[in-house]
Image (cartoon, rainbow, N blue to C red; front, side):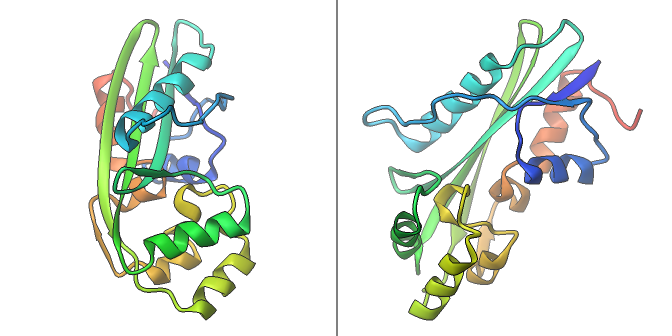
Length: 189
């Protein structure tokens, strides 16, 4: 069985490699990630993950892994900010508050699908203007759900987490390993 990572995320690859897994291929899915009207964060994240999974063509012996991470402030979905101004809006909204980070993961082998969703609660400290401006100037917010990366400079903003650190990064290691084993994937090979 060959493992295909359906993501171009270096973080997801790093997490898999941390588990001792080297995918046989990387095939990111190109899909529309726009939330539907009144869509809630968890169903949104699960729908996008399934759409990614469905968009990736595979052979009969290929197990494909897709995932999506969503930052939720209550019922509001905070996607990847398009501009520094939008990143500032997200970060100011998260500043001093708890929020949820939802990561849905799914595997497909032929017609068979395994899926799991992991939700972490994260508290961000109250950000000073200086911290916010320095972080925005770093450009680390680009391409990151909610406008921050816990594994980078923004790690200094997170005093508390309940859940999966790797899930907040983009791929919950324990849940991913469980799903891979359930699908019959074994490692190291």
